[in-house]
Length: 464
Ligand SMILES: Nc1nc2c(ncn2[C@@H]2O[C@H](COP(=O)(O)OP(=O)(O)OP(=O)(O)O)[C@@H](O)[C@H]2O)c(=O)[nH]1
Ligand SMILES: [Mg+2]
Image 1 (cartoon, rainbow, N blue to C red):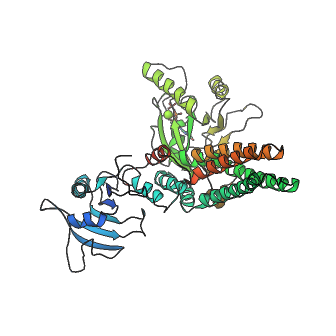
Image 2 (tube, rainbow, N blue to C red; image 1 turned 45 degrees about the vertical axis):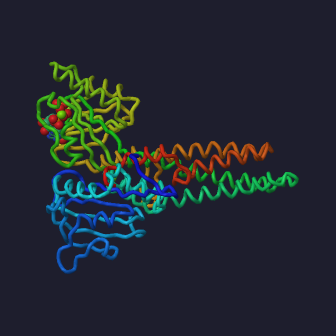
Image 3 (cartoon, protein in one colour; image 1 turned 90 degrees about the vertical axis):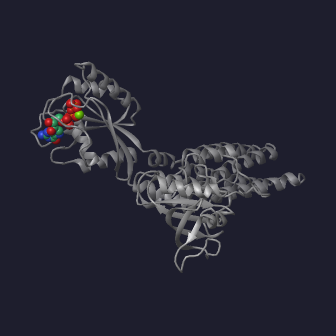
């Protein structure tokens, strides 16, 4: 984090500013200010216009005012200025939002004006970081803000919203409380060494610890889906030349992205684009038809296809249903034996001449008529995420940081249980219980380090 001053309680004391809208041309842009001097700095650059507009310092909270931003006596832009006074704001500090004309220049000039009057340029994610430091949201909720911004499908956005609303945090806090209560119980016995833990108390404590562990397991099981929704998955479309790989890509995307032609070897480069398959973000990759290349360019295309294939998590192997199975098809089938894959029999609108080896099933589609495409999407979803996707599943979807913390908590809890059960020293059990509770606390930010906060908030965009 850049140089920032803190007050006696370690909370930020300076006022930060940034352009909160994407850089580029648009209808409007917004410059956001947050901190103890936000209203004073805004007052220094803003001239209210019209009877109902007020100076930021005089304005009641949650009101909007029309006026001009001036810089060295010259008007920079006509703006709407929103005043939100602490603590009912995103950061719990005084916040001013200045909405100016879109385009790079107006926003930059407004930003310069506030920077010249005492604001500091915000680091990426610094507004959200303040919301966390000032206790408005916890760390899991702060991460959900970034998830929501980066979400590529409605389903991913819905999961982020649940996390932002505190669905995960509530469960994590409950888990941590449970561990702390068990710890308090064990520590009470350490403090009074004469009173031995009665066997049934011991039994009761290990039972409570076991149910905490099985709750950890439940949360850990959501990691796969969490990864799927956040990162999406890469699916390569492969097959020998001319079977309809590019046609399939276009159908799955819903628009003509790749060139389709009857000439084998049409696609020479790899083409990729993201689509939502039943809410799961899938990056579909069209590849050059894998064959012995006839020229240098095609050879490079085939080489790239093989690289892409190595990184893909799912393979859609396309066959031409209007032709018999060829040696080239079989070779490809063997080549991708280690991958999650689906066989797609294309050109179902033509008479079928394809015989699949016994025991192998393919999904029939026609990229010409669109037949079978919905069934293919269902099959893709089923392969990635077995079973239907229900609303309540979206409530908890841990990310890799949560997964790592939970695994450490799980290991420590298991050791504590072993120590309790085997009548080993209670100090040992207490030590591990504390480790477990701390690891769980990391998820919501009850225990954090500057490094951890830096790594989380640096992933945010500027102005968030
Ligand atoms: N009848 C019929 N023709 C199809 C279908 N899908 C694709 N084709 C035709 O098959 C030919 C090849 O299609 P492409 O999508 O370019 O095939 P490709 O696998 O990408 O080919 P390469 O890039 O050369 O490897 C084109 O003439 C398409 O119009 C289908 O479902 N039915
Ligand atoms: Mg192609």
